Amino acid sequence: MPTSAQLWIVRHGETAWSRSRQLTSVTDLPLTEEGERAARAVGERLASTSFDLVLASPLRRALDTARLAGFGDRVRIEPDAHEWRYGAYEGRTTAEIRREIAGWSVWTHPVPGGETIADVAQRADRLIERIRRDVRERALLFAHGHFLRVLAARWVGLPPEVGAHLVLDVATVSVLGWEREAPAVVRWNT
Image 1 (spheres, rainbow, N blue to C red):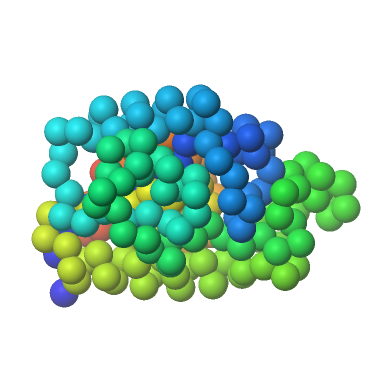
Image 2 (image 1 turned 90 degrees about the vertical axis):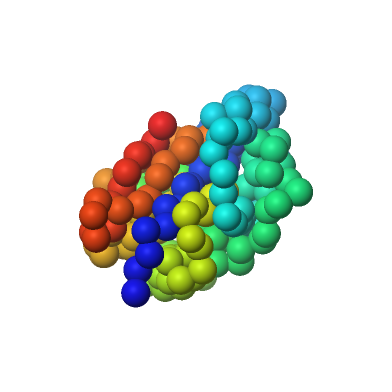
């Protein structure tokens, strides 16, 4: 039975590879100076909001964003919030991949040695189920662009491919919640 719990999501601050638009999953990059500044600003925006639970991907960029935002003492690592594993495409840009495979997209094409979109959706579904079961009011999650876009699509019951239409910038706050009994995107990419 769904609750009225909200899931507030934060995409991590900027890294060198997010700036250059390289696919970044298992490469554990630090935040840039701008990423650190933006993470502190996220903390200022969230300072007056209480959370029952604070989670983060196990990757450094998400954990550092949580710490710099002021949640380092409360954050719990959530393995299911790991970024989409890009396999052979790790560190490459979509433009580079498209020189070899016309029209390639992580949303529609295979990722050699990486995860399928169904794999990512399965992780998102498990996380959503736990949030809806265990959180009374609000949870906060620090994670990654592609994963969070899949998570938002799944939150509202849509196929994970819908995430392709949900642009998500670094160091932004979004809110997944409810419109009466229907799951809804309450705020996006702010």
